[in-house]
Length: 125
Image (cartoon, rainbow, N blue to C red):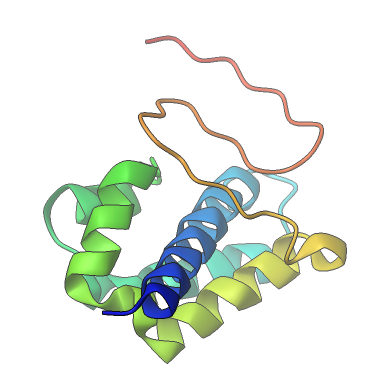
């Protein structure tokens, strides 16, 4: 595997995890639009056949664990599936149309994660 292919895979994984995180943060609020809720549900549905174990549980519970998801997305090949990538990009566009490509993050060992601007979060672990 060449360097270019590896970096493309990492970018795809970040895109998917970022979209899931943004969808979970925005889509589970009372103020989220139908488009956001539908986009989040569509991405989860598209990912469902690709993920197992802890990654599947993350999708079921809307607790997006970037580290677990990243590993499963790469292992399953979901990170290069065109339908998965299109669903992730669509979700980012409906969550924040002006900044659809703004959110490029890497999440490691995170317990409480939010993606976006001007968020408020309270965690108790």
